[in-house]
Image (cartoon, rainbow, N blue to C red; front, side, top):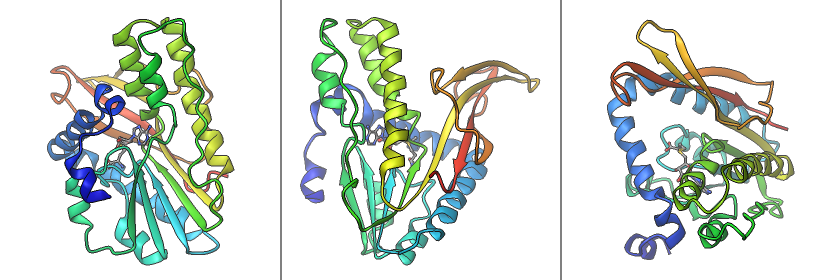
Length: 260
Ligand SMILES: C[S@@+](CC[C@H](N)C(=O)[O-])C[C@H]1O[C@@H](n2cnc3c(N)ncnc32)[C@H](O)[C@@H]1O
């Protein structure tokens, strides 16, 4: 299946929303900014391992948003668990190749929100309601002892929102409501999964001038309350001049080893 996937284009909704381009953009930025990202990646890996070690059994571990695997301690998880399942829309060749020796790692190409196709179908028609997100993956799999949602949550609404805005058929208030709904449906999904669950997510975008002052904050939860537990840190995502010649764009990140 995975070999077949390599030679097939991604489904239309995924291409139209620009996911493959986004993933190659993340790869390029990682290569340029990896020293600045090191602390964030290390802290993300540490939260995942803290969560994994709390699992009562070591059968199946699930990583939601594995993608390029920069922030996933995959070798350690592969040694701890009987099986590790990486879930993402896109499993780039670079990460497949780098981890080919880990025989108990599987990849599942799936939309965690279960809404992308439906969003694509109604995007041009403002009279049609935006879909309801009902994530179901692994809810009925009693062998799942650990799941980590890894730097994924704030990404769930991003590309669908941009696509809906480009199509312009749905009012922006409806699009923002949809973004909030995708975030709360994912958090609700994490509550319902079997086993231990870790969550790592950025919550806020910070625009910082060259004097080090924050000049703008953007709430990536669109007004939903941020979780108040866990550890917080800064991800130096795009230090100047990566995205802008006079500002850094950083993220405030939250890591919770035991979400439930
Ligand atoms: C910021 S990256 C996460 C970091 C990732 N662990 C890495 O090292 O590249 C966000 C990931 O979420 C995935 N993603 C976004 N929306 C998704 C969805 N609806 N279902 C599954 N994966 C999704 C993207 O393909 C991307 O790999």
